Image 1 (cartoon, rainbow, N blue to C red):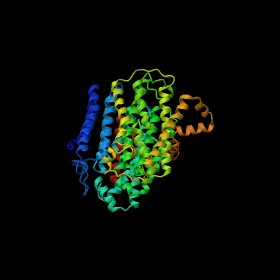
Image 2: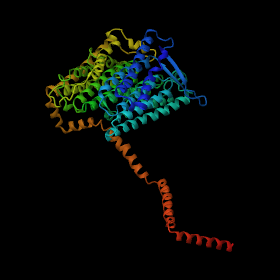
Image 3: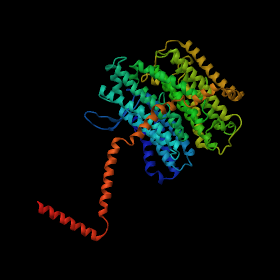
Image 4: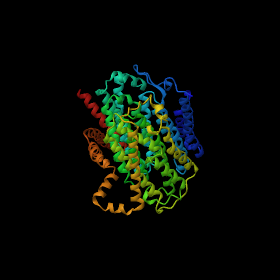
Length: 629
């Protein structure tokens, strides 16, 4: 089956080419078949390859397939080589499987859009770029996929480009992520200078030999790569683009948050974990960034009224958990939470999209309400996704993945009580805003009439994602639940697990604290948004509470700060630069040319006698000069 690996990225790319070149001349039925079918075929091939990988693991621990040599320049010979190991297998499965479900959902969701073929072309290119990123054998090919997902995010966030707001959101995402991408590109130059190659296996093998633990060059390289990951994964301080990215269609949001764009940073750090392990400082910075991000984004989610922005801040927070796990060395826990998060976040975005479409494109949660019985399939699937997001103990997959991160934040070699406390507080806040969202949207009085009910093409993907949001967690039970740990066994040779400091009894105690934080958050939201909603109104009458609410609502003022520090100065300098010296030089040349033209234009009067007179005068002048000489 390994010889089929090349088909996994090629099929979505072929779909993109067909739709981009001939989409306007193809019926909508065929657009849907090509767009959704190409990704679905990739998902089937991945399942076949994955089963073979698990049943008959390759002796080398990976599949490798070289398609051709990309270029040959002064001894630099990067190849188009696809590399599949346990880590990339997890990502490829999530990208293709969840991507296929999102494409199927989109067939119905986007059916009335005038740019139907353009949408699927961009979605296929998005999936191809992410697959190229995670299957790349070398960092140059990885960077090609990296920039590809950046381009696709721009195209899809601003898909409805007629709106100025959407265009601004697309440009904002593109520009902010370029900051991290620039740092990452510099990091690739440093790596090539140090190792003479960009082949990932060679780099991971050479780094521990050439660099000592804690070496400055290892820290610099790790931080440059981290900057790229921070930008793509919307972590502090480059997180401001993701909430505005909700301007795109709901399937785009689901794809960005669950299977592509924001998970790229997590993959990069996990893939290059050897370099990060050589720099304890860089790893601690990753953990701190993750903890701070999950804390800040959680409180911002608590104040939003747009259902998609709640989920956007939730993604920033959940990616923060993954960064925290990566920072403390809990590599397997981070990737496990990535996979589970992909299931329930895709489910929540797609279910939210169904609600928005059913209520005449209404995004404001406080204009919804009373949908529990009117949209039963949406309600139950959204409830399952919310339970997994809130890490409801025992019955949700999110509990099993997030519980590991909480434990390692305390007990791993890189963990400490402060990181654990912030993660626990983040879990409490997650339970609060998730329960708030459920109550406001599905309970209470209906404020907007339902326009139409979603069809099976939208509900079937929700049911499938709901199943995995419930049961996928059982592939990696906690230590004190037993010893069935398929996920760790699969990844341990790629991402070595950190040795724990304490035993199973301590882990059980921490699980009980996590359980209490989750139920405490659910109960608090129940009291304030269902039992006694008037308490919220009383709290808002306090000036301090209202100011704090607005501060959290604005994303802790980061956009305002960046406007003052960066945007306004750049615009100010640009306005001055419009009339700089260089411009005046060219303006001077233009002025002289225009003046000469106007002066000479007097000779073009159209009168024959003036032309004859000019010839006579010219002849007299020439003859006079000849006589004088």
